[in-house]
Image (cartoon, rainbow over all chains, first blue to last red; front, side, top):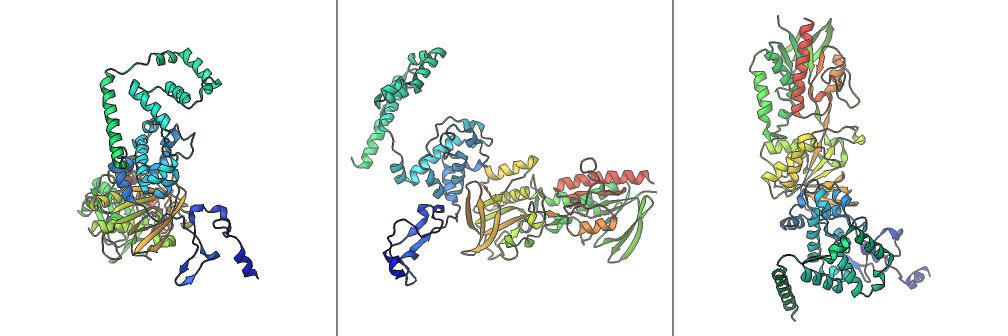
Length: 256
Length: 347
């Protein structure tokens, strides 16, 4: 009778038989519909396995790969003091963005751990405060670049699905660089707002305050006077050529 | 008439004290328990010394040569002070050796009985002596000295080696709460040596704090920046056997908050220093104080670290606490100066 009851019980959740289920991450639970071990059929409630969370390898080849790149050449120097994370401008906004930990994961080749941070690993804004303060001259800012490249290489699918490049913002950004040769954050912000139809917010409370402040300290006028770098025409041509080539290659690869 | 001074212990501190006193024209009786001079560095065949990697022979060998070349030093090998009495401001000591006992009166005494390497077998979690591939820093030092750096289990060169710091130090469980001062630097030095001679072999150092104090820090930086030695934060709680004849270090990566069980070809334990059985022995024989760590206690650790609580008995080297060879040599000279002053004053 009791057996029948069990059989009729619907399997609702992954690993629902596990006591203290909340302590175990979904991806660490393995359930097979039909499982035979050493000739014994263990299908049913005995087919639930918890994968060990223990790290069982330091993969040094990964470290060697990073070390060969220009941005990551100083990875061997890091002694994990945390000065980079402490000085980081991004960490206060995204606590999961931790340059110190990312460097450590790269040192030990811990891709399993690194994979959990694909969504935030790209957040470095390149302010270089960490590189300026690093006592060992590791250059963590550029290490984050190396990290981005690594993630792109090892987890192309996740990058594709988890990170979506905002094509509109990219277009605005490119236009500004090609058109002016300079990046102006106020202008970037305004055009991005305009293009995404958030014009109302442009004259919101915060923006009004910012405009007033900028008018007072003179920054507003320097924006208006934003000129082009000397002889920008030829540089612009080079960039356009490069982008064109890049497009051709990409299209070629995609078989377009 | 020249002074008579007794020096107990023929390691770096005792040797330097004896050599300096001899140069002052003092008659020195150097009592050594082993059949050779040089103390632990000689006994365990240290090869290169930190921080400048100079051959240990340049230092220890030089001192032994000076002490043995005669002068005013009489060396008593394989001998000990079997009886010790105060005689006014002087001391009567019986020196017992294989050839018999000799009673002599000394104006002052220098104790330089040194330290003992912590025996890692006492701490079962490290599986020392259980697995052939678990060795300690003194074993590795001898291997390097004999140009025989291979896995003890199969005689093949290792590809992945772990150094574990603070073995027998900073651990209430084994009864030693102090830091042994030199093991970090020795381990880092050995990792550099290993990577220099065997670049194929990866080196990992498991640490809680790395205490390569002063300019020894240079070695630590060099190990990371020039030799890619990887440091991993976390103490090892267990060493077990692993697949393919490996030894597995079980620990917690405290920076990522995750447990690990990593197989290695060889594990090197940075065993610390202890006062050894000789410290309480000499303490009761000479009537000088022992401290709570099992080393001899100086009268004042800051003002007179080379004086014992008994006037006329001086201390030098690692018998008062973990010390680098250079510090022991310095203390030998300091104790010699003080012992000489005491002897001359009470002539």
